[in-house]
Image (cartoon, rainbow, N blue to C red; front, side):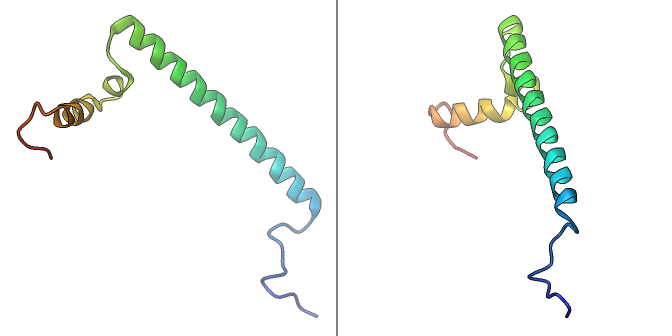
Length: 78
């Protein structure tokens, strides 16, 4: 009796699935910690230099254009 694709599992055993889920948890935990650390570093640098996080990563012109457009400093919006 052959199994249809709907009934087959991605993993051949529960042990393989458990190992995969454990690896996913570790990776997600690492990514979350890296994101929190990056945000804290960005806020600290913003406090020391006065330039915002968007300016630090090179998106300052985009943010400045958006602010100018929505505060009516420009006669046109892009």
